[in-house]
Each structure stands twice: as C-alpha cells, then as structure tokens.
Image (cartoon, rainbow, N blue to C red; front, side, top):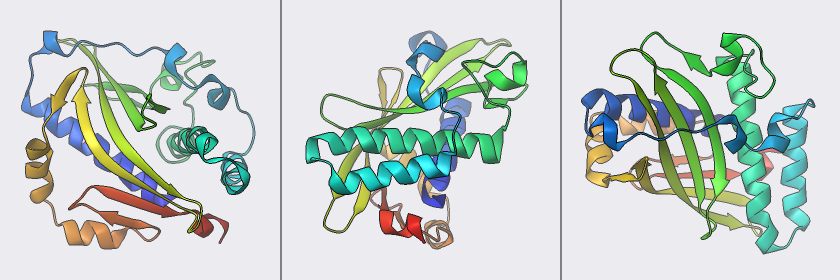
Length: 215
C-alpha cells in the first residue's frame, strides 16, 4: 500500500511546484470540485478500510475483465481515503463533518486541499482528481487531473498505472514540464525507497502486485 502513498506524495509535490511557479493565469484554471463528485459509497463506509480493500482484491480474482476496472477504481478510492485518515487528517469527513478540520485534507494558511478521488473515463483510464483552493488573495479554486493508463493482469495478479497526461483544469501540463522537475530529484533513491511494488520515474509507471497485500 505504500506505493500509492508515495504516488500521492509525488502528485502533491508536483502540484505545489507547478502552482508556485505560476505557469498559468488564475482565470484560466478556475474549476470547482464539490463533495457530490466524491464516490459516495466509499465515503459513507464505516467499516475497516483495509478489510474492504482486501475484499475488492479478492473480487478481482473472480470477476470478468470489463468489471475489473470498477473494482480497481473502488480499491484506489478506499486506499486514498485510508491514507488520508491514517496519515494526514484523521478527522477528515467531507460528507458529514461539522468542523473546519473535517472538511479539508490539508488546511494550510496558503492553500486548502479538500478532495482527492479516483474515477474512470470512457476509455477505462484512471483519473485522480486533486482539488485545491486558496481563500486569500489571489483567490484560486482549481483542480489537477492525473490520467493513468491501467494495465491489469489476472495471470500475475498485478496492476500497473502509467501516467499518460496531466491537466490543470482543462489545460494540459506538458511532459517536459514535470520531466524537468523530476530530473532535479534523485530518482534512484526515490525508487529504492518504495518497499512494495515497482516505481519507475523514467516512464512514470507504478506496479502493484496484489499478492503482496495478503502478506
């Protein structure tokens, strides 16, 4: 599960860098995500997230290929919410929360990160949407959309997510932009740090072996 956590951290760092660099004018990136966009069944869940994720993984063994994408979407959303509540903000509850802390994943004086969720497009690609707001001047309400190709193998019981495109609202962030920032990091050190699955920053792939989750 740490592979997805590293992925989320990487995405957040990339977001902060791009926004901080002021690559695109504010009025061009205005986009609002609301709580109604979240996967309601996942966010209304009161059970054990780890157990629910394992149930989704077990279902993958016996489902038809066309249904596997929905299970993968559910699995990723459960994992995202589990990571948020365990490692970032245990009070996070955007559907039923009554306090300010419950409404934001991160509530920083410079920006607010309120939603991260996964959803499928018509091509069965996985889109991870990250919603950001800034209440102080300059005011910003926008979202990043990270589009991943999905390669699921029932034979090896593994999943590979390959970053295909990145959009700030509907404006594409070109590969050479985030390639430049990634080139400034020690890619080998980052890749070795991932102890489950395989992270490859040269081709932006993340591979998860579902068997590892049962260990």
